[in-house]
Image (cartoon, rainbow, N blue to C red; front, side, top):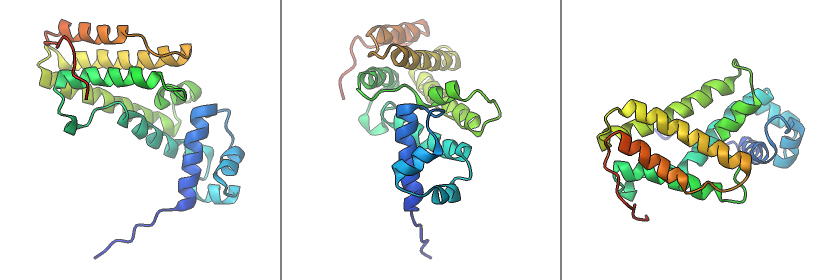
Length: 199
């Protein structure tokens, strides 16, 4: 039996507008009126799909973060070793921080703007940080780290710190990020290549 999956074009336009505006202007500074105007839909149509701004934020954050991480986490078909995969995350982060429209990590930005711990965004934000930490844990285990869980926490904190560093200063990350990653890996008895091949 064939399933008829139809894309809600209005919902897509609203989400795309939210992604653009929340990233560029900030969540708190962007009202629903501006989202509906940018999307080219009526407020009534917007509210039919997202009963409140909180619902819109909760739908926006996974999309924005998926796209953000897709540019940073190497795919398996790149053929990188676990150590190279970890290093590539931070190399990609450095490259991304140099892009003109770089605004930092969507999850960190949302958490900074929305302080209510009961907001639906919080659970989503936590799940994405756990996803990042899980990725580092798997790579650390495969690389033979002495304490993969500890290394994963350290790398996740470094990643978050690097994002904040670049966003606050509005400048690309320095090369010292790579040195720091290599230092953390070496402290865990992980053999680190002198230079990672470009892929």
